Amino acid sequence: MYEKEKQDIINAALALKEYRLIALSGGNVSIRKPAEGHILVTPSGMMYETMVPDDVVVIEPTGAVVEGTRRVSVDTEAILYIYKHMPEVHSVIHTHQVYATAVGLVEDVLPAAVTTLPNATLGPVTVAPYSSAASLEMGIHTVKYINHKRAVILKNHGVITVGGNLKEALYAAVYLEDAAKTYIAAKSIGNPALLDEEQVKVAVQKFEEYGQEKKAKE
Ligand SMILES: [Zn+2]
Image 1 (tube, helix red, strand yellow):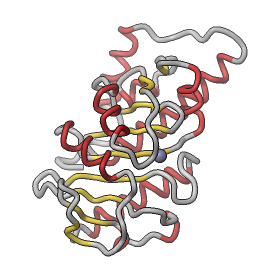
Image 2 (cartoon, helix red, strand yellow; image 1 turned 45 degrees about the horizontal axis):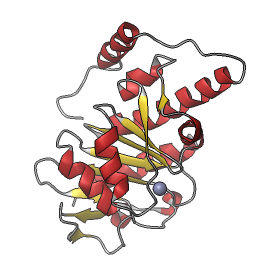
Image 3 (cartoon, helix red, strand yellow; image 1 turned 90 degrees about the horizontal axis):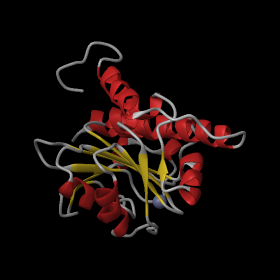
């Protein structure tokens, strides 16, 4: 079941690898099928480049396996918590991307200094307190600190991005990393100029009209 969705998940993971947001078997990618309530999640400890659709596991919101023989991602408890408490979210991505995580070691928020950040994350990205791998706290902190945006930085750990679909969560992760790089580069030579609230609002609105004509269901 869900052959296309499973391949989409693998393709997203490979894109994350290409942009150097994940390495080896780190992080995870998942989606929720709204009608059925099923969650599709990448397996634990497998390299993305050798992953095939059958490796992606289909589970119930309780964690019970519907289809698949692989062990689910170690972060599945946290992922299920996010889906349960954020009904508008249908995709969750977790990475250990270097630059956004680095910002989280120093700052409490990554401010919106470039338009691509609010385009993809809907605004500045908050740094949540530390939570370890494979902990429920990752999920609890995401829900608590994401603040209606599409990304949160987990201090001393990594990043969680969310979206109404896989593409939104993927874009949030990629553009968050670019924004973090630009911010760090600017900080190294001075005090970065930030977008004001109105400019952030416009950046969010503009991106809603971006790209090709939207299909009924993406
Ligand atoms: Zn992690």
